[in-house]
Amino acid sequence: MPEKVQAKFTRIIGTGSYLPEKIVTNDDLAKIVETSHDWIVERSGICQRHIANEHETSSMMATEAAKKAIEAAGIKAEDIDLILIGTTTPDMVLPTTSTLVQHNLGIYGVPAFDFAAACAGFIYGLNIADQFIKTGTYKTILLVGVETMSSVLDWTDRSTCVLFGDGAGAVILQASDTPGIISTHIHADGRYKDVLYVPTGLPNRAKPGLLPYVHMEGKEVFKFAVKVLGDVVDEILAANNMDCADIDWLIPHQANLRIITATAKKLGLSMEKVILTVQDHGNTSAASIALALDRGVRDGRIKPGQTLLLEAVGGSFVWGASLIRI
Ligand code: ACO
Image (spheres, rainbow, N blue to C red):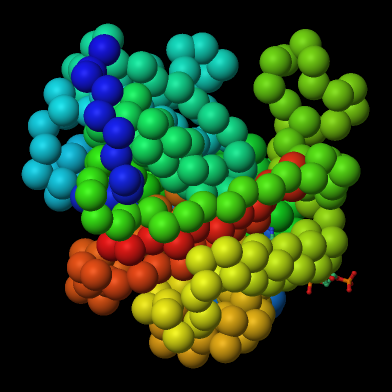
């Protein structure tokens, strides 16, 4: 157990990501379901997505993203004292994906756990990490959002299979005297359980007659997403006495360009201040914000000292936002 040191802030000190090699374009999908590149782009903004092969499991992708984040942070894997993995598509029920990642990194003994918060997984993970660091329980945390959404898609259902992709995004978070995570706000409302769901998990408990794939009432999800994302960005800015002029970059969950545009408009932010990957990745659920963050950091748009607003909503429903000084 590391020595307890109270920390003022939790800082992201390194980012990394992994995307499967195989790219599936909209035209590729038009060969297997009745759809078109133009329909998918117009309704979602998605042009392509990465799809995992049999070796690119959630634990494998999470490990590769983690290695890059560790390298970017300039630490050794042994410096990590907690592993957090946000995923709704683990390799299997047991062992947990986080312990598989721990094994791959060879850092035995450090605590590791998975948590499921769908597309809001990365925001929930920032909140969890922030608690552990601020209380002085842990000093250096690996947080990964990872999904193999292709494993829960019905490839004959055009209303869902065109929207998702696979990948992993990772960050190393560390105790610091300077900001850091400014605040993170999370919410959930289980009344919406029938609007977006995947009725699988323990094989004997699957709902009879329901296929173990994503089922979604797209319009309901859309309306709910626009409303709660607008509310949560208002909430987090008000809680910190900030407004859109204080935000250098909006890094939204990358589900749908129209939802992202609606949130940016509500904030009064130009789309030039939004990091967008939805066109290239599709909706990678818990991985999406971390993938976008890593892209923005590595291509030099996100610079030290800037303020980022992250927001996400996902099935169940769960949602949240985080303000971060990078
Ligand atoms: N290609 C062509 N036509 C399609 C496709 C497709 N891939 N999918 C549906 N259609 C058809 C429908 O069958 C329907 O045809 P009809 O009018 O003959 O009945 C027509 O297109 C319109 O369908 P809608 O579902 O009404 O289309 P809509 O404009 O609502 O767009 C979409 C659908 C893109 C799913 C939208 O509702 C949406 O983005 N919702 C949010 C969903 C989301 O982001 N989910 C991600 C998971 S949760 C999260 O991350 C927030």
